[in-house]
Image (tube, rainbow, N blue to C red; front, top):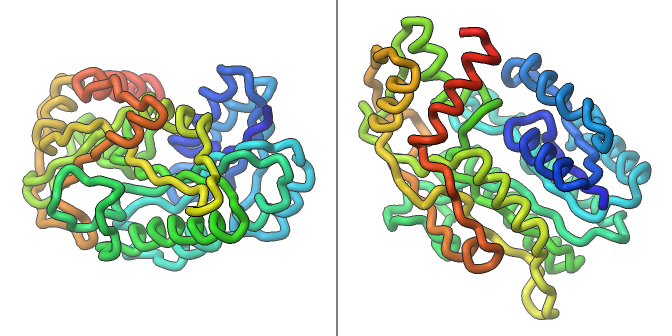
Length: 326
């Protein structure tokens, strides 16, 4: 079985590719290695993947229509796609909004059109985000909740991806599943994510930015649990009964909402060093609390997160110190 993974040199894409290789599958990994964050980290992930015999790396931009069509023509045996390439981050969408529409919307459309050329395609799984829930007050967030009031451009692009996929499911009966990830963290994590920023600043003796003066809660999802959700979903494409489009949406979270201050406390403990905190107002486009209802994922493909933050944070800190030498 040959599986296409977009964003393969990214955080979740790297771990997903490793897991697919570990279960004996051939992976075609696509990434443009852009400079949104430290390219050397992406290259290190890529190099670990290319050391594996069944991994093929293709350097290209998923929004490049001709390049994606040529890729599909080279690998006609692709049966499943895990689409994780995206422009992430709420804050950066305030600085460079156009890259979000190009990568998340145009890139998603280009990929869907390319996938229409795959006669053997069984299932396309793509990354959405908990950000689509906006400022919904009802907790935990359910996939049945309305998500038509995004608070950031990033969230709007992720909601747009879901809508485009639904239309392609209707028009072309393409089996697709969108996964709304909730604050994924762990080893090999992005340096722009809060946990890595906190670790880096604490070790350097610099203050850490604490938004909304610490009055925030997040459903933190350890990377291994997120990958287990991706693979479990990938193996169970939505059935096509001929009425509704063969499209599904699921939350991938830890089903536990944790105080930001408690999260910081665990990082301090793992580092053996106290943080100097810079208490700041809520940043534009952010939300106060997230909490995932995972009942549908549990029922349909046995998703069951296993890693608590008490276990996950020390693993992240250990990786950081080993990789960066701090």
